[in-house]
Image 1 (tube, rainbow, N blue to C red):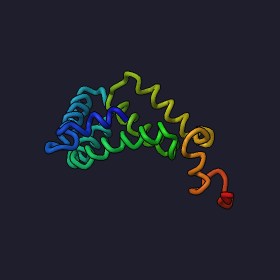
Image 2: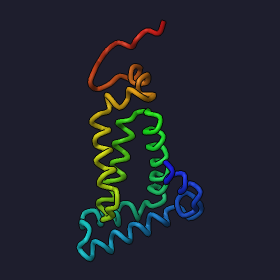
Image 3: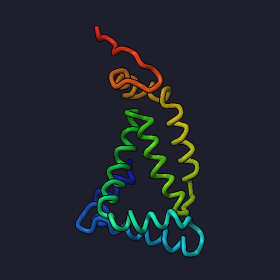
Image 4: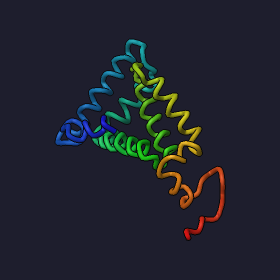
Length: 144
């Protein structure tokens, strides 16, 4: 969440120059692909899809990071937030940045797998009763 909040105040992410930072990231991926460090398929995706729509993807990244962070912190739609957090993290792995990304990806996968239990301590405890869950189909509980 803090990464997204930091990007909200940056012009190269959501300001007058939105998309500039993402284009720079894309160019780095393309350069690594030329050296054989990154998959050519991922480099093609970054060049053909992300770079051509950098402004849109820039907003998606910034507000996606914030929403994933809020979802995980308060336990609201934990599995969905963990899935999208893992998806963003996997993008960094495909781009050739390692750091703590493999560990974070494993944590995201475990949260998705443990959503039923992970939701017990957050907003999901009450929210999932009303939304329904894929693992149990029941009638909505009556509040008394």
